[in-house]
Amino acid sequence: MGNRFEFYEEILVDVALKGSYSQLVLFLANLTNTNKVMVLKQMRLSTTNPKLDGVTNLDSLETVSFQGVFIGYRYREDAKEVGRK
Image (cartoon, rainbow, N blue to C red):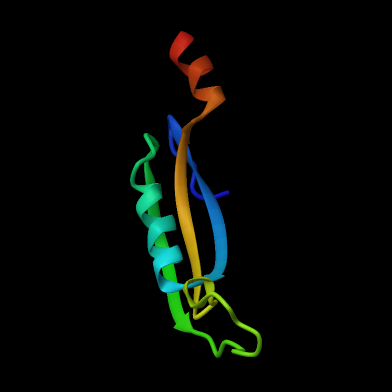
């Protein structure tokens, strides 16, 4: 959990992915199509040393590692009780 405010709270999500650069960019692009508010708090993108033995599809080769922390938001349930008083 992240910070708590009067009417909402933060939900922290740690994400670790490995894949090709195009796969990771597609994942991040698909996040922009959601109707939820999300913020990327931290991100680390690094290259990996893939093993080429027996690789038949270079497009799916794991060449990039992504680690990040996303923040999502939700209304606090107890805030509804405060509003009723």
